Length: 231
Image 1 (cartoon, helix red, strand yellow):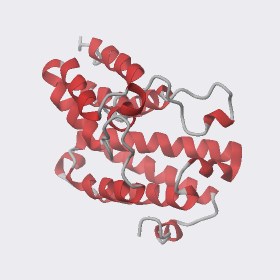
Image 2 (cartoon, helix red, strand yellow):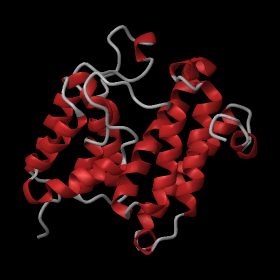
Image 3 (tube, helix red, strand yellow):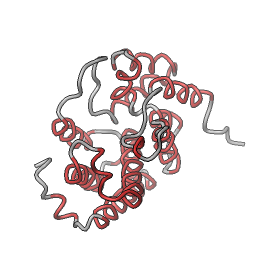
C-alpha cells in the first residue's frame, strides 16, 4: 500500500502557520462579523486547492506558509529573513525546497516594522518573475491567487461592489492584477508545466474565475487589461 502523502511535517507547517499569522484576519471581514475571519482560513484554503490540483507534501506545506514572509513580520515582530530560517530549520532536508517555494509566492519580505514596497512595483515584479518559476512554485502561487479570486467573487455576490473598498487599489487595480495573473499563467508553456496537466487545469480554473468576476462587475477582459493601474 502506498504511504499516506501527508506526514507530521504537514502538522508542523500548520503549527507554524498558526504562529506566524496569529492575530491576523482576512481583509474587511470585521465588517461582516465582529470576530473577523482568521487569516488561517485563507492558508488552509490555498493548501486545499494545491492538494486538489496535485501538490506534493512540500508543495502543500509551502501553500500553508506562502504568506509567512510577507505578513509574518507584522504578527511575530521578527524579520522575514528570520522567519525564512525558521522554515528551513523546521523541515530538515526538505527545508530549503519548501523555503524556495515560499519565496516564489512572495512579493515582498520586509523586516519587522518595515512598510511593504509600493503596490505597483511589487505586483509588476511578481508578474515578471512567474515565467522563471518552477512548476512547483507556480502551483503554490496559482493556488493562492485562485483562492483569493474565489473569495472576492463570493464576497462581491454578498456585499456588492463595496468589497473592493478593502483593497488599496480599489476595483480597477484589483481586477487588473488578477486579469494579468490569469493571462500570464495561461501563457506558460515550460516543459515542467506541460508535464503536469492538473497544474494547467488550475491555470484554467483561475482564468474561469477571473472571467466570472469581471462579468459580475459588468466588464470585459479587454477593458480590465486597459486600466491604468498596472500600465
